[in-house]
Length: 110
Length: 113
Image 1 (tube, chains in turn green, red):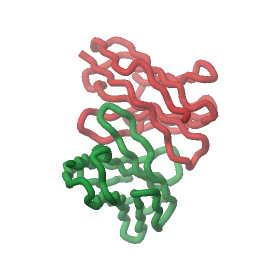
Image 2 (cartoon, one colour):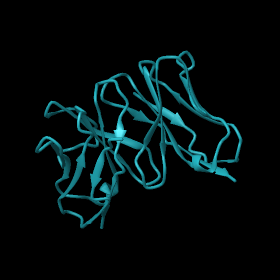
Image 3 (cartoon, each protein chain N blue to C red):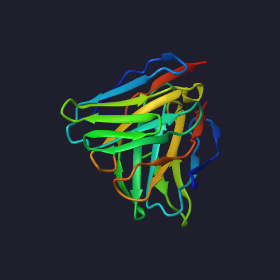
């Protein structure tokens, strides 16, 4: 069974802090890993998209995938109040069935 | 930047009534999806649609649900006889190719009373 585990938080950090968000999974067939950001009453917005293991950096955001540990992370550097949102990890085998984590609610305080 | 649009943003209906949720995917996308998110819970896959037919559906997507692409732009989700437990946010998503990430609309909040 495909399962994705994500600590729902909430997580509260001061402005400028480094944020670390994580997900674990049990299905070794997952190959595509995504992080979405969801503001209140909005749809998920794609932040990062990676294939297989490795790191990917985009501005203040870094995504890491460790397939051997079935563990993925999203790091946010120099966090801003505008980063306050729910962050969803998602993954798929490359089929049509993408599985989401529960989402971690992040608040960045000025 | 092109986006997925969904209407209405909020739909209130009585139990047992039929509802149709509408989506306009990004114009050059070929794969279409519906997801739902019950308040405080995970985003859950409902159904995927490609080449005018359902590719995959979850156990949630029972006989009360149907999808249709009635023309070249719209993608609809119909719930035939709504139940209280159908109350949720329903998100439409689309993508251009099989392994590409999904682009989501802002959702329709369905409230069944």
